[in-house]
Every structure is written in structure tokens, then in C-alpha cells.
Length: 168
Image 1 (tube, rainbow, N blue to C red):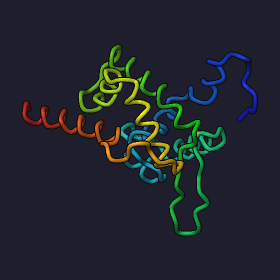
Image 2 (tube, one colour):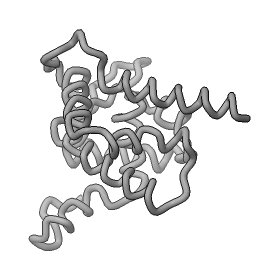
Image 3 (cartoon, helix red, strand yellow):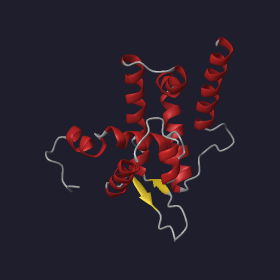
Image 4 (cartoon, rainbow, N blue to C red):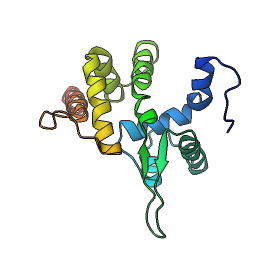
């Protein structure tokens, strides 16, 4: 991994880290799926990521400072944790999801979170980032008694699944 981008262009610099589809899929699964261990990331991945690809992308995400990996002792699972830089990819992921819903074929249950983030207020993205900071960095949310952003997204997902099962 090169330390300096090929050029001074901000888009190029970001793409050198995030431009690989598997990298974004791994980040998606950590951010939205709460997956923090290699086995969970591999087995619960919708796209069927191969173990060697996953290992490489996790290594790259740690090297570029988007994730950290704890030092697991023998027999323990290593845990991956988002850094602040990793958490700050959330608005990018939300924008990509919005674009994907508008311009590519998707399924209702897998597109529901992107639709909610697109239709919701910017506060929802901020709330989700605060929740990720609490989970991954130990920084308490301002209002922990209100439903979390991930709970609101999960409720919307379950409502879509319920509607589909009633319709089908």
C-alpha cells in the first residue's frame, strides 16, 4: 500500500482506499451489519466474499486506518473496530446507497436502509455515526434513552419484510 496517493486529487486519494468494491462491502457489513469478526464477515456476507479476498481487504482497511484489529490471543477471535475515519465513511455509504436505489435494480428488503437514509433527515446519519462512535470508540451518545438509529433502521427493515410476507 502506497503512503502517498498517485496525485493530489482528493477523489483519487479516496478511491485508492475505497475504490475496490469488496472494501466497501466489508465496511458496509461492519457499519450496518454489526459484524466485527472474520467468520461473521465471511459467513453472513450477501455477496459471498472469498476468505482470501476478505483477509486482504481487512488487512488493507487496518493499514489505511479505517479499522483497527485487536491482538487476539491464541484461540480467540480477533475483533475489528471502526476508527473515526472509518465512521466518517458513513455519509459516503449513504450517498452510494441512494444512487444505487435510484439507478440500479435492488430488492426492497436490502434497499430499505438506503431509502430511509436517503429520505430521512441528515440527523439520522449523524445519529448513526454517534451510535458507531459509542460502539467502536466508547464515546457515549448524547441521548442514550431515545431509540438508536440502528434500531430505527431495523424496525423499517422488519416492516418491509412483514409487508412482503403478507403480500406473497
